[in-house]
Length: 136
Image 1: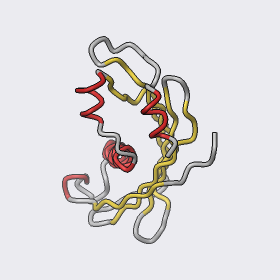
Image 2 (image 1 turned 90 degrees about the vertical axis):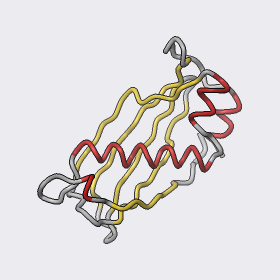
Image 3 (image 1 turned 135 degrees about the horizontal axis):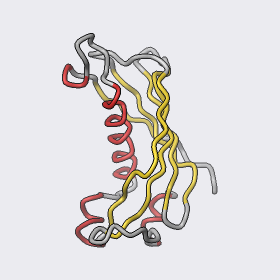
């Protein structure tokens, strides 16, 4: 697979994302990573609700390996990257990183996502139009 450009998105940490100590709660990191993958898809004109309505396809995470380095804190500006590293017939792998406004690495995640038929939840091959969009 050819090298893909790494996309990066900026998000703000709000009170709702943190625990009593003002640190981002551990499960919220996955929310920020998910938001970046959704924005990565949108950059490629892929709208997940359209996939569901028009093609009966859903795109789901089947594996996530999250590694925490440093805490994200309330009012931080996060830079979250998204890099597709492998595209298979019915799944795709991503590597993502999260940095704060000081460019300190806060967390990394590797994600595997699969293409499923929405009404049966059976794994199916990505349609060619979707695979083409992934490699833009």
